[in-house]
Image (cartoon, rainbow, N blue to C red; front, side, top):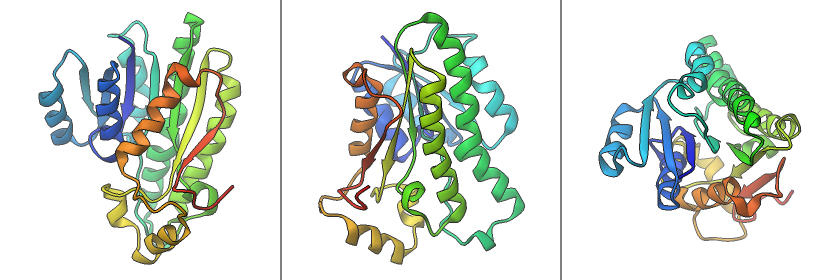
Length: 241
């Protein structure tokens, strides 16, 4: 049974990815600051397939210590899904200094440390491993939330760079969702921006977290073993690029 780390696993895309991963036969290490959400998942799925960690990736100590601590319990881990993220949907002028630091830590700095700490350990095995980062269409075409858009653009750059850095054993790809329904972020996106996303879509079936999870697990797995350094849109055909 391969082991897969999923951050931001208690809700939305992360939760859907956790469920799909367990269905596909993975043992999941789930991390989130939502203790209640993780507890509910732990009760539902059990310790045989799920290990949960209540962590806040806004904390520098957590960012730098999370992966090393896991390897005190696990000799090898197959994959990492960097899903944890923050979106405020507000003007850059409305950000406090603390919120700037928080979003940079959660959306970008955590990915830097978790990815390099994972790859450094797994490259020693000289066997196929996989990292999937969650970017966003906002990182490609811009966002009304400048900090969110900037961090997601950086995630795309980090994905491409780390595909080189971690080759030939650790593949690194990104999924770039657009308007995803039934998530906390959806309710935070300003109405005019949601309408714009919807107008751009050429497929009209609303995208749910489970649909994004299917793409994530496809990228994680062996079927995509020849794919690295790529950004895969899940956007109903919006914003062709």
